[in-house]
Amino acid sequence: MSPKLLLFILFAMVVLVGESMSRPDLVAGAKPLLMPALMVWFYSVSQDIPSRLRNAWLLGLGFSTIGDILLLFAKGNKGEMFFILGLSAFLLAHLCYIHVLWQKSGKKLDFLKEMPIIIAIPAIYYVLLMLWILSGVPNAIKPPVMVYGLVICSMLLGVINLFRRIDQPTFRWLVAGAILFILSDSLIALNKFAMPIPAAGFLIMSTYTVGQWMLANGISKNENHNKNV
Image (cartoon, rainbow, N blue to C red; front, side, top):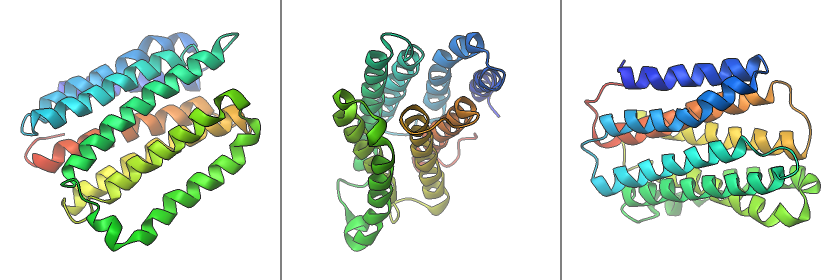
């Protein structure tokens, strides 16, 4: 295991300890460093990926860093504003990821056209989640919340569309990462707009951290199978 990945794991552990012990100082100190550490590791293991794709994924991780920082301030009088700004940053991150996935697919919807029924799975999940949370979402931010949900589900579909274009171990890494990312965002939405979730911070950050790493690891494996994790 590379020292760069160990640094990412160290920051992740500090964040999770902070969440589990209700230590916002630990979370605030380590959370902004999570994605930069992942960016350093990803850059080191993705040298064989075309630079335009590597840079697009790094840009997505950069937007994720901005989102992480903004969401630290999503409480108090200006909490709603910081929540929307953080949501916007993560939306841009997912658009970067979708761009990379679209390029990997050869700009074709081969598998989704072959198996359109698969589209129903994230679509049904999206509808059910929106029905669950929208009554608790302030009217002013309902549109961006709904748009963000569509974008992250599109990211999952972008991963699924690669089914016949990448090896199955890589495909499973990417699908698992996308699902964990969606789960993390769903937990945020449910905890904020629907109902309090026990240990919400720990669950949100653990699924988010692992999801981001699995996606990055899957992308790095896709074109460079000899790099070690």
